[in-house]
Length: 75
Image (cartoon, rainbow, N blue to C red; front, side):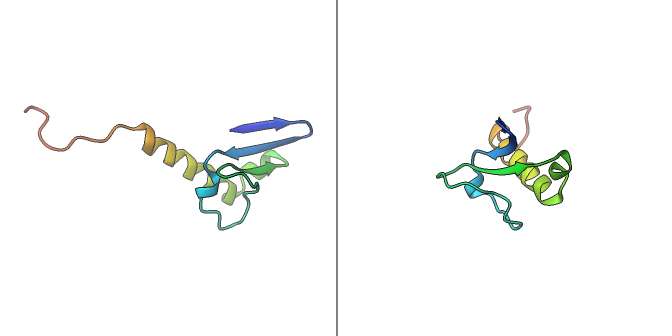
């Protein structure tokens, strides 16, 4: 989620506490949500920030996609 507050913008990750964060960019103390402060557009292009975004997108896609059926569809 993109959060716009007075004087700041952040990327909020609803399940951020579960996210691997080797660059230690995520901040916040709530049970699940974490955020990354965005000072400029360049910050979004930073590889560790991009990795967090991609990982979050993949986890959402994994939940949203129905399981693939196996076997012969003509049966």
